[in-house]
Amino acid sequence: MPANLPPQFYELDREFKAEKDTREKLRMAQELLRMMPKHKGTDKLQAEFKSKISKLKKQIETPGSGVHGARQVEAFDHIVKEGAGQFILIGAPNSGKSSLLDSLTHAKPLVADYPYTTREPMTGMIAFDTVQLQLIDTPPISPDSYENYLGGLIRNADITVIVADLSAEKMIDDLKFIIDKLQEKRIVLKAKASEKSDDPRIVCKKAFVCAHKFYEDESHHKLKDLEELFPHFAMVATSILDDDSLDAFKMTAFESLGVMRVYTKRAGHEPDYKDPLILHLGGTVEEAANELHKDFARKLKFAKVWGEGKYQGQKVHKDFVLEDKDILEFHI
Image (cartoon, rainbow, N blue to C red; front, side, top):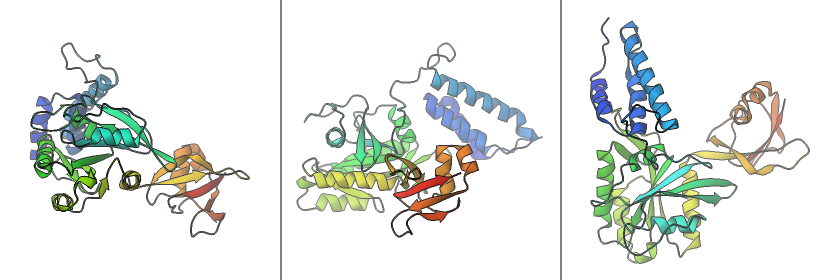
């Protein structure tokens, strides 16, 4: 029986065979398997790619376990996610990424007036209200510098933050180069997570724009140029000299995730505000219970909810839609 594979499969398969980055190779293999028509004619090919996927996963989980001579996974190509979301800062040399990391977290990157001081990624945790957000500083992207592991980091992150230096004369040229470079690497930055590409080789990543050093743009001409280059993108103006702008960055980052915080309490006790459940917007009581444990959700009879605009202690069932900062008391 013929396989009847689509033309895009053969294009992606050629790139898969040429690709050297292990994590990107795994992503491609999974996409190739997804593209295959599921019938007897592709049984052998499906089994082949399932085996490849398994081997690639083992390579990633245990670097050095691959065949002799295989490329080792780079030390910086994957950072384990922590907190409610992972954000990666990208930008041109001296755009202020490291100063942002320094100001927003307890991390202490090397900050200097000369370019290329950041040689490897550095992480820090942002405290926003009752949640933690993970921020990653990265080496700059320019005609003189691009670290190959950046593609893997951007693909893995929840949100990309485009740091634009409002004090730079060539700000727009610098940003256009970054956009083109990422597109060359099959990464397209989008204003919304729902925007997808028809080309399976391309990864679309949600991003927002950080208009940094806004005190340097007294005429606001640079900010207008930035809005024209990134229409429909969320944008926040920041300065390390302005605490309110840094708070606005935190709010923009959290809102970009499209999630909400749900707090839990035991009957007769105060709510636990230290470790909220993180659910997508529109999440239900059942989904909140599943975050705790599947068996817990299965045994759930009802819940009580407290929140803005609600009858306090209102009895609700599994399909009740929650809102940010609701408090839940489960009954099984």
